[in-house]
Image (cartoon, rainbow, N blue to C red; front, side, top):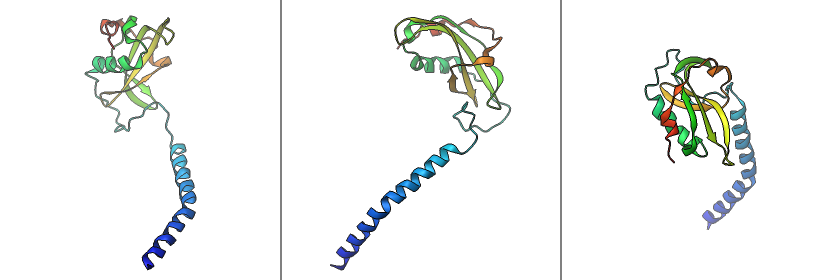
Length: 152
């Protein structure tokens, strides 16, 4: 019967310490999110090297992501793509591929031609930058028929 008393006593301690432990874990989690100097432009912890490899599969990777990124990938018009170019993004050199297209929005209407940038880290697509700004300034676009033929 002594084990029963020990078990009940242990249970009572867990109940009284439970809210304190939860509060401490919550505070540590919030501190982890607040700490650091993340520019918000890369989610990948890369090697941080200046010499990034050329993204050899940039077209198929970009198409695969855009198929899920677009509301209706079957309705793309006026698609264009620029060759990968090294740019300064978030304080680091990255390969950036600029894409221009006109696709239907959530309401089913064409939203007009938009520019997007695909950012590559260590030769692989890391993310799409929705407002590339200066990253795509002066980009030379070529036709991108593969994007206009996307399926769901």
